[in-house]
Length: 369
Image (tube, rainbow, N blue to C red; front, top):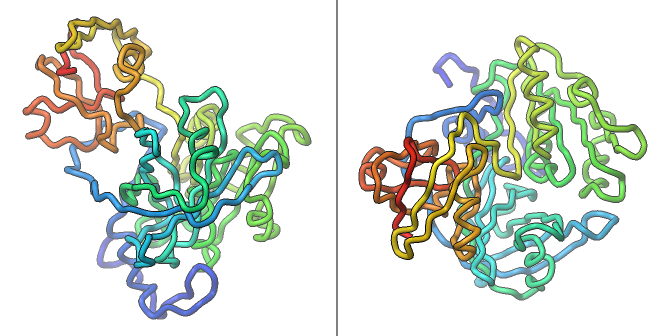
């Protein structure tokens, strides 16, 4: 943002139409803290320093089924003493510490103006790694939990305040609607020109359908059973030049959009996925776990974390994208190919390594595990 950017002359309404005198200041604060996150290229950013690791105790106060197939549930959290919670902005997520000790990340999909509750939504994945099943089965109302954050790796950059585009186009696939919903509400409230395509297998499987369709003709809902698999042209309908595209959903969908946007001059892409990114320019190597002497092979297309979990299933991890620090370990060998976005030079020099994305620069990596 530069000094020549226009500044709002009146405080806009909050996300649900209530006047708030400090909203304009909050919008500018949002932009000042925003960083672009591109998925059309592999982004080897400079270290950005420590993220906020504050831990906040909360309690489950509400559960709702949000899809007709019963596989998506929303969870509302509040502080046990009813105090105000740390502020957040569209695109933010929480690191949720589950009763089992697992840590999982979930996008905030409620109202940032509500300082007393957080809402997330989780789709049950029967053959997953257990986090979603635990949310569905082990978090009844009254359950105490601990969260870290909120953190924002998918910030919403408003046209005219950090983005050169004049309009916004949203694409959400299934549970990928969760970070998009607060962005849509903010765009609507601020009078931004926007459109959205929301896709899924069927109307029974996509969550928050009533909330999404309440925005009227700006939203196109496409389901595979009614319309077939969407093409890039279907997903980007209405996204011409001078448009910012915000996309969240399955890896296949985000890849199709990234490839299409790369061929559209003047279109900006901001994207988030809920799974680990593919390994790029990887080579095979071996990892030795120093405390046990166990040696693990890491193929060129697999992460260290993925392979180490086969022999150390208790190892903590969360984002699998190199920014939450949950999987940080100490490397006893020095030939580390750092691919994270958060460790400082001092931390790297001390041997810190994020094994979800970083690799070995040679043939053998020794970890203090």
